[in-house]
Image (cartoon, rainbow, N blue to C red):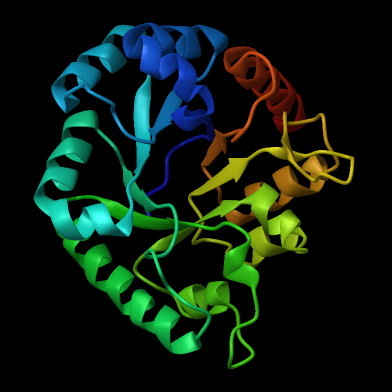
Length: 253
């Protein structure tokens, strides 16, 4: 796993997807003006990688990662590599399992083998592969194990991108999960959980997650990238991103 000299706070652009659809270049400028130093992509819309590379250069933003489905990787592996290299991404992150995967340990072990294979292919191109969890990775399967345990029980050639909200949603303590993956978790996704019974995702610092513990665990575990994300921001998505950044910086000190 590569490391950098300091931690970076980035934005998963899915958070501001409404604005990206209207004006991708201006949205990147706005994100940079908030104080973000890096971004994670969730698609480029109608823009070419070369165009977006120019947008990044103009704003001073770097690209740390891109979320790419395993189905897209299967179909378009050479294009995925070229795009990531053009954008300057360090990581390719698979944001979930294959469509249709079931609840048997055998299916998840088969998927693990696929991740191992593509991790090697990406490594040959100078890229590293990560896997992003939601809540289902902590469901108990037929053999009494969880998908997360299967995917990360060994020191794999790919790495977890731990989403602290979804880990908490599944009933885990995010800080403990991060520490379990110490030295193997380059990025975490940060979003809070609402105090009410909806348990919906919330602006960092506005919910019930223990950020002091999460940040402490992330530091001990060697996390280098804190990626802000909110799936369903209420009101202005850009304002939500701004407030999350402000609050996260306070926790980071």
